[in-house]
Image (cartoon, rainbow, N blue to C red; front, side, top):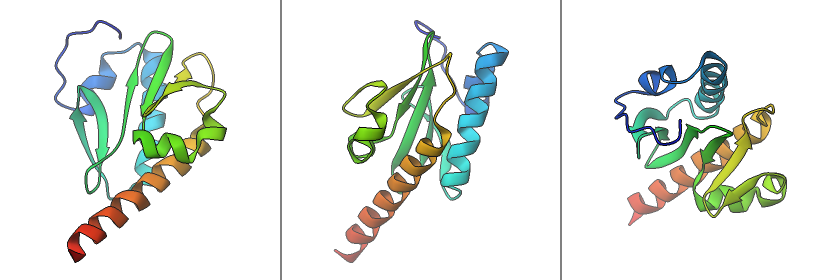
Amino acid sequence: MEGNNTTYETIEQYIAGFPPEVQQILETLRGVIRESAPDAKEKISYQMPTFALHGNLVHFAAYNKHIGFYPAPSGILAFQQELSPYKGAKGSVQFPIDQPLPYDLIRRIVAFRVAENIERAESKAKK
């Protein structure tokens, strides 16, 4: 968790480094993101599980007391009111590890980021 200096090559390797109860949360989160972004590619970026489609979509990471979710500043801003019960910053939100994650909200944030990245890619292609 925090302070871990392991270098990860795959999301499976990342998830395997946590206790079983945290692995279950991470696998569920991974599945929710996959459902919401079926064309996205999985990778490790910044030593975190990452989904990419025309650039990075979202990252996530486990810590001692929370699951960090990183949908870029635009993803936080677009859902600012719904994310207000959680600690966060410009491009991140912290979901307490001892509470159920808001998977429906996460689905909507990922769908928003997919649409945003596709729109950006199409706009670049026209130029």
